[in-house]
Length: 226
Image 1: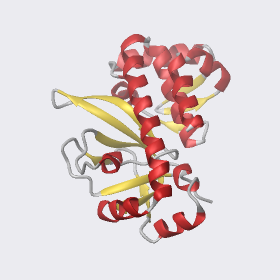
Image 2: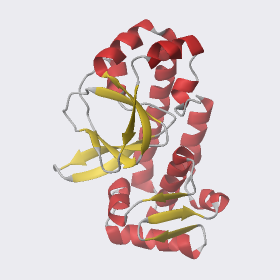
Image 3: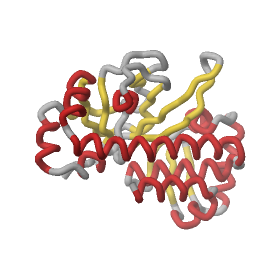
Image 4: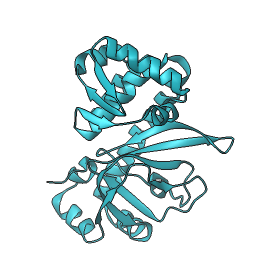
């Protein structure tokens, strides 16, 4: 079974040609895959792992603009002909992934029409996610944004429980730690989640969807329709 749905969607022969260049690895929480301005040396196809794309301001403030899991690939600038990252790619969920050197990826991408089709489609959905996230961060309250983010994470890790600190969530949502605490408490009071010592458990998926803004549904439908 292929854990990454982008690779799983490819014809068997096309995937088999890629397989010789794919290395199974484990991505660890907090690991930085790229920094802004850094040359992209590998692309990653997450399985159970999760990677945040963060844009930086003033050299130290970070805000999540994209989230990549088993539906996609980390290293999209290479698809568009660029070898340098514009964002920080940070592992926020430990787990398995497949890795390929940039040189091998560029070669395989040029030769494989199925890979091109899948990745061009994914680029479109990732751009939609980034645009919707920007609007969400500007117009919606923290509780709605936290619910959206938890749902997006839940979709990708395929587990009701995962670990995340207040500090890390603050970076993801662009708010202070106290804002995350209040939003998490509100969701807990409605029995939608439990949150203790960095362990988050989804208790009521449908209720969490009702608490989230429409941005979640827009991005989910875009991915499902890709």
